[in-house]
Length: 489
Image 1 (tube, one colour):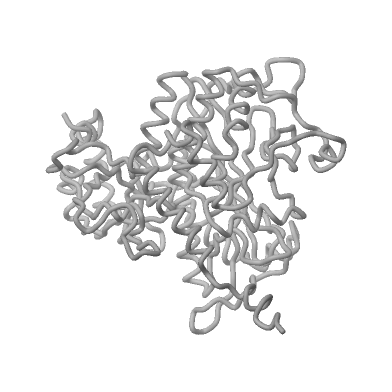
Image 2 (cartoon, one colour; image 1 turned 30 degrees about the vertical axis):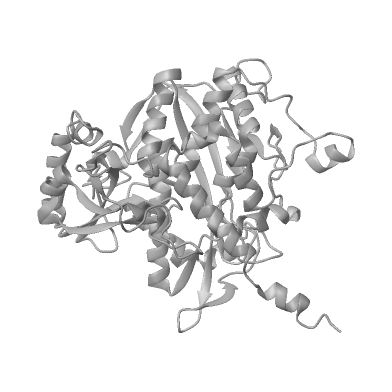
């Protein structure tokens, strides 16, 4: 059997397909978005009437391979990744992700896994390696089979609500004032974030806290941590929700890392832990009747957290946690290309006055380090911003964990001092790449992190991001004009 056939015929899937039909009928769904994720984290796919659910669930839909690279052109006017002569991928829906869209209850969405075309001469029906969501599932399963651990992740996506002109162009201003944690500024955006929370609840996100951050219009809303793949799906869902709420309120939902200088950027701190055991538990989030299948509202609970301290020092993770930190520390330069994946990302890392995590060190509750133990049982990777692709990030972190555990990598002693003061005192600390170009070079030298993007995935990622970097280098900006236009005579 091909990979596609195995996926379609996996145990329990036929029963789930019937459950989706029951939900379609119960909720009055007439149209479904069949979605997958591009290399940059964009949501792409097709819309298909719900009458064709069973057929599409079995046969899938076809779309050009280049959709995995947003179907964008490089600076030489070549399609990135795949040319027009390439075959078409097959998208197979994963029924466990089916849920109603709360802003139009006749429409639902389902995430998909992508495969090579059935008629390909080489590896027909094989996993499409440029499908970052499918790759994450495979890598997480391989990691669990090898080590017996499940990776659980909680993300903290900061983003900004910006105002716009009547013609839809941005005004260059955030909706609120840049006062961190001020309830008055949080209150000014209450109609916006309450609508986000309403929609998030309806799509399976167990929202747990939120606040106003440092920049104009900047909010952070968090949901309960979960399995790495489900959390990535929820972050993608959250971005879609914010985009819809922005349309309803005449605002711009901005996930760009640093649209304003002189204030904080939008990071997306990623908290991680490795667990043995545990079980999936349905969380109905107050719904009497769920607007989707049970799995969308399911979270893993219980088990043994291997990152918990195993000595009297409550600030030190257990052995598995330390080795995992060691693996991430070793690969931080290459990981930066994934966690800080745009030219604009490095505006954040250069602006060190705003707690930019630019040093490859770790500590307990130390925000000046790239990694910190944020609480007993988990640690936080801080050099990740809100433009990152969580599927690529999850896969790359699993590969770093695997290297750390397999090779028993020692991360060294935690740093308790402000890292800038520690350097003044003579400590030598590796600095992270401070441009996208440099980060891509570090990634090109790191075979472990490259293995998180096997075959065509790395080719497309490098092509796409290197082209982005070269376009930037070849662009004349407003800074150029302001600096050099009248510099002579």
